[in-house]
Image 1 (spheres, rainbow, N blue to C red):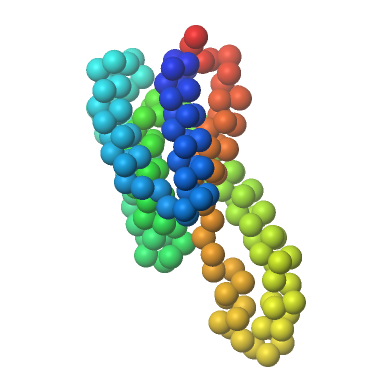
Image 2 (image 1 turned 135 degrees about the horizontal axis):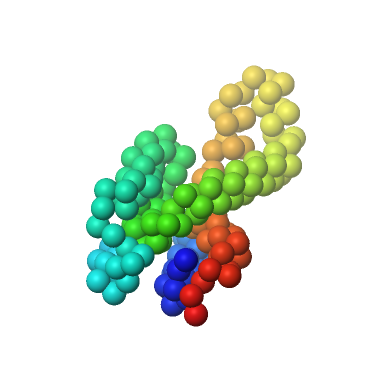
Length: 169
């Protein structure tokens, strides 16, 4: 369960973050700082949903660690991993697993769409690069990162749809 004001706050934040991420391909640190402040406020305002326990930080820590590795591999932006780290803190603990699953599926779906789009857009270049064994030319067709905040937004909306009867009005 989740109170409607918290659900809507997170939804609104994700709309703004996704919009900015699409426009600039960056997530500024201000959103992560806001999430940390909101998390500490929620510990006192909604203690039945937010806890200062080790399990509260499980998904957040994994996102920070995996995000750092993906950043080093130039797969994910640093702002994305920092945002996910703090974002999972403002999601009630009882929704972490479900949201994580939706996030995984959303990432695969959007990533597949981007891959297919890149193949379609660069089909001739891909074929030519393969023919002349130009590895750099081939890799240049797939090297772009995509804005990840919209993927988080999709996962949040999907989660909201599945728990709509459990949102407290």
